[in-house]
Length: 308
Image (cartoon, rainbow, N blue to C red; front, side, top):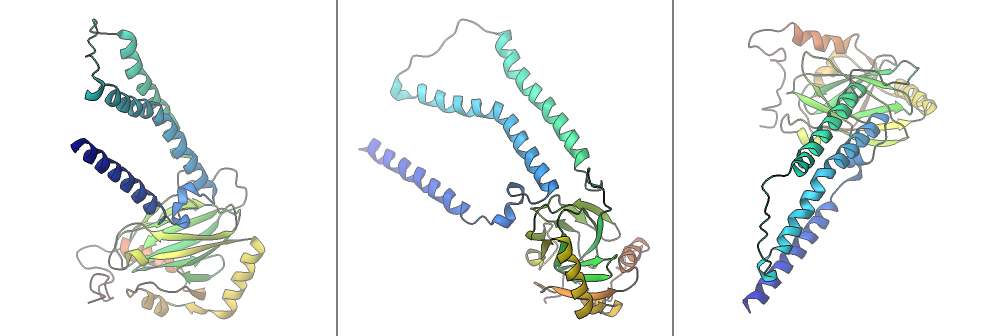
């Protein structure tokens, strides 16, 4: 009777765990799959690196998992298997197998990772691109993103539009907010945004579509809503959008930027025709020339007390 109850409990636990895993997978968002659904050159290379690395590691992991269950099954008490007592104490052949194969895999992984680290360096222009990259300057604010198009002289909040097939160089910093992280999962790498520093990231959208961008570094109350949409379109549509913004939007003046510095959550996209001269560089210089204990935005509302 006890054995029957134990078996029933084990079966119930097994099926409960299986159903729980399947239910948890239903919550996965395709846009957040990023690595598994790449829409850009960099994201595709990162997915390839992930699966190549996984396949190499499985050479060691799978036999270990299989043997673990095989030994448990073979030597369980109910089988009454006699103890295995070999008459040898050492085998050079077996030692070379279980030490040599992992060492070879580690060397191969190191070479692959080293090459991809250089190839996918976020500061490096993407190989094979002949045209100069489009420049977008991104500023992390509490809790929103401002994107400046210096060549087009327009700006947006929580919205990016890029041409398909053209390399984009993102220049990234932060203002009046803790360190943040810029990430468009389906297009490629994450990189940090820090006050007084300019980080760079080169990405390409290979196909048209809408891709979610987000902040992956906890930086206060509005962290989870610090998202934006990337709209990848054909070049002619991109030009039409720029023309539309220039005709309909208000300018991003120092006063307007000062309002954006105030903490807010889940801002809707905004568009600006014209940007205060050298705004991005001014934000960088402000923090670079600051020393001591006084915050350069000391007279501005701060993220830590904005919702009190």
